[in-house]
Length: 350
Image (cartoon, rainbow, N blue to C red; front, top):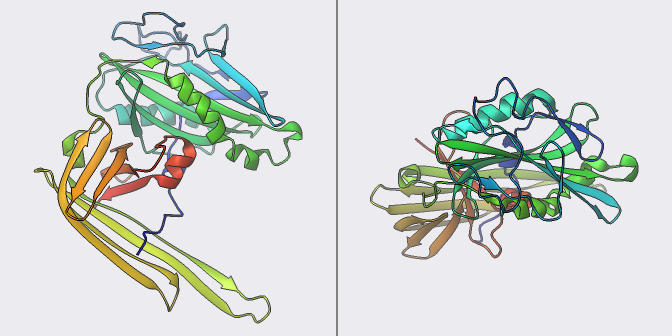
């Protein structure tokens, strides 16, 4: 039986960004206590002004090269706006003061997000689920993102926060995606369809981010070891407007992976779908070995081999360990739509 796709992925609702910015105009964003000179900034930390193109970077190998075509503001922010079939799309990038230490990067990102963005944006949800990725040079970064609303005009923005490892500190970067349509009619709904489009410019800018150290695994083997479960259950009721009769359809499934310290795994899947009372059931199991290389988890089973893009191993708000995986498919991508549609959040059963 073919495995049904999950219609509900809560990661995008739980994730958030941190920037503590107030929005004015199409993309004119005014910083509130985030740049160098803020009393809360770390003494001696680098300022918020990004380095220019070709700059060798700061101690620890960190640099953020200005993307070509973006406008550099007097305070060091980078801004790019363009017309898309009559609508105005934009992306803004800025740096925040560095955070000392590489330990507990996920906790530091969550605290920064809650303290900064929670104070200045609406619709900010607590306890973001932190994802991971490599920068272009192989340095690790921890990141999270969310759609939020400006307090002064209720417009919708998508905010991302990245913490890039750099020697003995974490370098924060904020990306803000915006959307504006003439007259503002239906802007919130239209904006939701624009994030994948403007995210392509974010990805271009990320190519100019360099950090250190490099060569570290994105997820350590001990983080993979354990018993993890991923599942979903949804139903829909249908009413015949002529006869008044009702029917109900449902999709329910669960997948389980047990990864041992010796790199053996066991897999179980069970699912059901169709009209209630006439459901179709299916199951599958497999076992073999697992391995992590770069940012890919490979499970080589006796029946088939699966590959997953690793995009996180954070903890849930309740403290449970997770593995956030994206099954292999053409054009692996970290765009909002790809993560929301293809991401699978496995939660530890123990």
